[in-house]
Length: 249
Image (cartoon, rainbow, N blue to C red; front, side, top):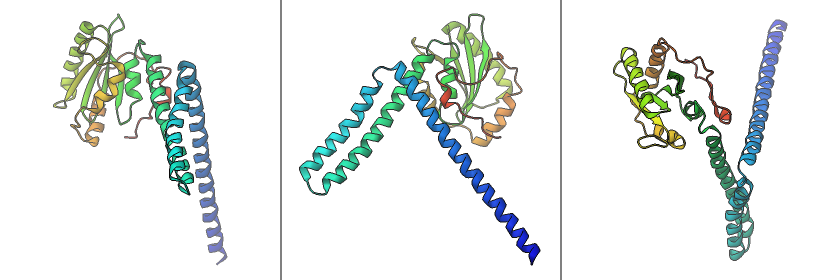
């Protein structure tokens, strides 16, 4: 009986320790998110002089309208409409801040080599990005992106040179990707190019051609292909807060 009691005590101690560890991890995660939010706000405020006025306006417009409506209706509606105005104002502030933050990040990376790869690595979703699988001495780059649509080759630089680099990469992929769809885009502001700020929307419109498990299989095949430039993976400074950890496969 004593032995059983001792075992139960050890189990309870381990459970307690696990709960404490989980609680500490969650607390550390919240602190990290708050730190990232403060950093993002500080950087965006320095780069965007209109941020504070726009945030104030975003909060006041719904708050004042609902407060005025509550005063017109009267009674307990004043309190309920005021609280709803505060809630709606907070949502508006978050939405405006997100848009200004994204705009500021794009401004920081535009014109930098590898900006397209940085934007794609920061996008939502399971996108496997291999930067600079093709490159030229003039700093033209082609990045390979693997996802549910298939393989997407993303070029940035001189359109003619990038076109040739993409053609070379397509020939390489033919031996590894099989019948998996291969798309290509060029990022830039010229005709038939995709502006950097519209890259995420462009990817979102691509059809989902392959299943997640097939993405993993294809990913292993593509890793056997000759690599590109030995540049560090990850976003250009200014996009770092959104980098995703690779999924376990």
